[in-house]
Image (cartoon, rainbow, N blue to C red; front, side, top):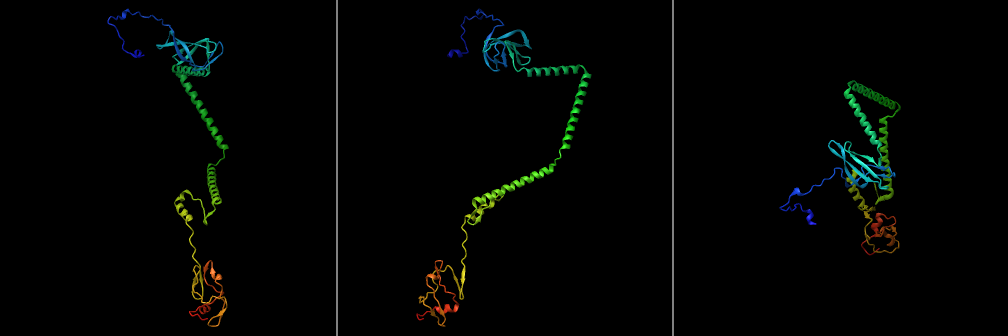
Length: 307
């Protein structure tokens, strides 16, 4: 396998190239090549369709006595895939295409023929105008007249549309803008209602949706909502002599005689003493009397053991 890649061959010292016979090959000899169908075609024998790009093992030969600007023209022989009938086509360097010669007909050629006819007509007209200046002037006048007619028709159509169209653009823009504003407001109201229905109130604070521009105050509001509510100041109970708070624990002054019997003070005024269980307010022992006054309270408590 290594010798097939050798570029240098060995020539013996007595090598004479003139003694090597030269092969005389004919110019119309054929080669076997692998190619694809250049166009869509249909076999004339069996009607089989051969699509563009189908691969064939074909025979290739050079067309004798035919050239285009020194470019050789080649002919190819293929066989139908169904009936094995022979189909031939050759190259067309003038149009950069292929020509189907025998055994098949080319499909989808109507568009190509129309384009070729239009190009041929335009070329003939151009050659005629070059040779006849009056014909050129006539064609230009005809083209300008046709263009003016088209412009007039277009202006008439525009006038007709403006006549029938009674639409105020400014009014439409205002209505559209108002609709957008109403839509945004409605969406905001729906969002507020949805938030209230879901969350309601947290710790006595109502929840309100915060817009994007109010993000700076979001932290403060969250702190207020999470912090415990402030303690209420105790109410003061006033009396004739001083002030007694509600949270005072125990009894301010201890009585010497806690019997529930009715007694009289030093001035001879009777008073009524309540039991210890009824003297506490909300679990706090505060001594109270039924409608006491300042003089009776002073006379009720003494430092001596005597009544």
